[in-house]
Amino acid sequence: MKQAGLCIIIILTVFLFFPLSKCQGPSNPGSKNQIKSVMDLYGHLQVTGNKILGEDGEPVALHGMSLFWSQWCSKYYNKNCLQWLRDDWKCTVVRASMAVEEGGYLTNPAQEMVKVRRVIDACIELGIYVIVDWHDHNAHKHPDAAVDFFRQIATLYGDRPNLIYEIYNEPEAVSWKDEVKPYAETVLAAIREIDPDNLITVGSPHWSQDVDVATADPIDDVNLAYVIHFYASSHKQDLRNKAITALSRGFALFATEYGIYEYTGTGKIDIEEGETWLNFMDSHKISWCKWTVRDSDGTSDDVLFEGADEKGGWSTNDLTISGRWVRDAIIERNESVFDKIEPF
Ligand code: MG
Image 1: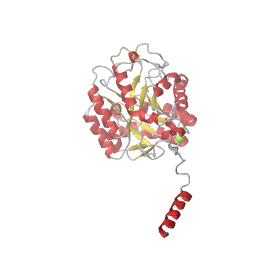
Image 2: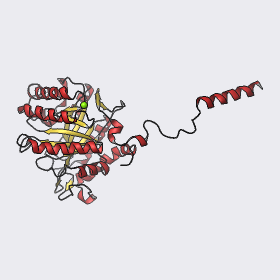
Image 3: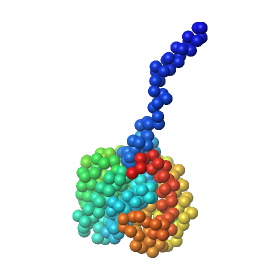
Image 4: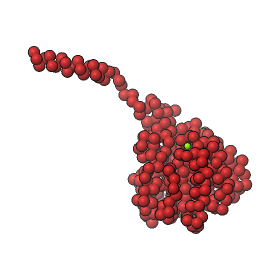
């Protein structure tokens, strides 16, 4: 009888303390029902050590596409196209490559700003990340223009977690210490006066390959990643070794642009080396955007054949070799991300 009494007490205790244990169902704070966008899932991005983390403190790797130079091909800078890139390609990030020289922002600031804002506004609405790229090879020669531009962007969007700044796309054969770093510190200070916390990325000399040089003399900031660019047919293990050096020093990298052709974006394709790069980036949780959303003859890193609709809705026949390859690569990596999100 004593044992039976004890059993009754235990059973009552279980029911008193866990009365709903059979009725709670699957909902919890991370459940599918409560996550409506990529932004809900990851939130504000924060660099810690050599990783970019989401708001939950877990490493995040974004995968998506870079748009082409805004002054030469802005027809894909529209919400319908970006929505297609999100829904069909499963992009979690898009890069707006705002041209600066050669008919870009320096000569047509209002016109280029409109294009960039169209992309930013759409990405905010679509709940994905957007890189605002100062697409320039000589940014250190006109820092005032960059300061003015990024002050405007920070004022308009610095409170949105979607926004990622890229303050210098690809410096050429110039000095990190004397040219790129002083420029970056000036622009960075201007942004931080307005936006203290969003992720900022910065390129390094030799077309954003010298991440080893940059991280030997790093910029002091709370939320900064170094840009690395590669074109797989030209850049191989030597460049990955530079990346490893930067990572091993504790700095985060972001491949805001890359291709699988030669450094010109055309020439010979090297898919095998492209796969090696993707595996490398996967293993280090390096986020990436592939170059580029433009239509042409299918002999370059452009992902679309000539005439592909500017509003998306592309069939397989609209995609170049490069386009088919990268769409598969993005879906492979991001499908599980979108599985956690309520259908749009
Ligand atoms: Mg902010």
